[in-house]
Image 1: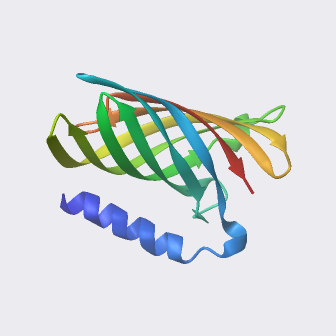
Image 2: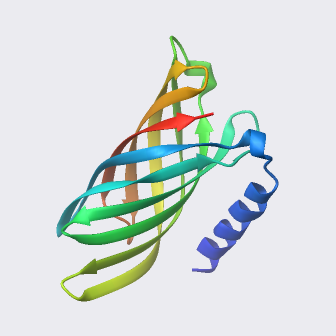
Image 3: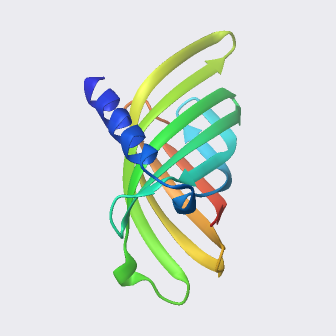
Length: 153
């Protein structure tokens, strides 16, 4: 718990140093699976800061509906593998803390967890890109999330 709070505080401090010109954002949607529930999720993400040329802070908020309701706030730090970028495609990997609140049949739980994420982006135009990602949950996070979205610069 202490580690998760420290990670979240570090992300917030780094994000606060970003200027408006550095911010990219967009919608996302996909499928969430865990033992006991399957859901459709939707939400948004933002690229708030570049810690280095290849390391980015990318928080996201998602709402899952289907078998119950899941609200998730993710605080990802990702590394972009620019050395493997070609023909508009780029790849990234990383992870971070997740704060999730799950409700089903009158019962609810709130958990801190960790996620690992692997994804790819494709440049559609100079100001827009498509993203696809796989998110794997560690501990109290959903087992897997498959997500697609757009990012606007």
